[in-house]
Length: 433
Image (cartoon, rainbow, N blue to C red):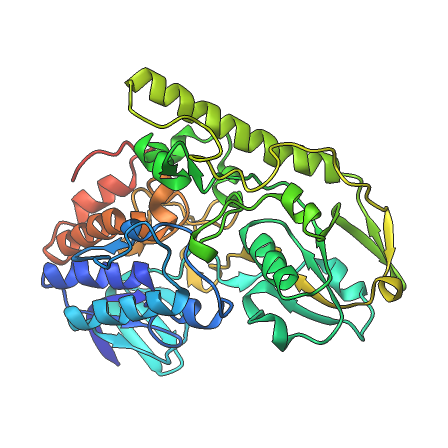
């Protein structure tokens, strides 16, 4: 059985950033990946997918975007190339095609059961991201068997779908982006909405996410959340397609997308719908308005030079508010000619394969402090709100990777006590190592 100091599970941006940090500190390690480098970006994104963060936010330890369009939005396949180049730049020890089935304590270290055999190590860094499997609601089982069903992660392009209308369930980022693409390609689209915010792509001359960064919103720490459950709240809808645009449900209605309330149930070939469409539209409108007001206050307080909030300097993406369209409480699958259902209902996390009692909270989510688990030698990178709001996005991985890399190196050098003390800290304070 092979022995190494550390094993990183996952070769996406988080795992590779962790590998860079360990390589820089001389820690012997392996990176195990179930598929290829950046597998989720390859196999769980549609063909036209683009990042929603501007290119200048694409950075990892030792590498940052340096192309000609810092304010553009690179395609998913381009980001895969970015990751491959990054791994080659420091000869990351990635072993692809290896599934990790179980991680369990073995003395002072760990034993990993994998598809390539067993492996022993002193430290494990889990870099599988927050979500590992598609979340499809139970109501899917009640749909007629002749309807094609797929999760958003399996959607590729409009031509790959069966002829007919498409029902998209979920109005977060993925659902809105897919619905917009389908309608643009001439499909009849029905969209079951939910509670998701709307963020302006550009406001007062700056990208909306750029404003979040400037105002320090991406550096908020988990202790500022009103509830731990908010760590899993979906992101506001936005797109990097077409140079980047605001997505607005009111504009969708103008373009012919049929807006519906939540999918409440199935009666034969009829779908029962909730009466929450107006509330869902108001939620997105309020989110947009509150964000813009926050930017305005920040500009005024800091006396910043920023253009006015007019049509020239703001991408509203359609009407700010509009009367909600009439929505039925039920629709007939045959009358609407719906032949395909796309579940844009997000993902779920599953860490049950890690045997570390006491290391997971009531949600089944890792307990950790800055990526350091209370289980000695167990670490995490790339989780939502791991240390800050930005921890779960590409832009925030570098800080957490460096911190975890330093802690693993300390354990390797005999400083396990200091690492354990850090893990036991009650709240994240942002204190430097």
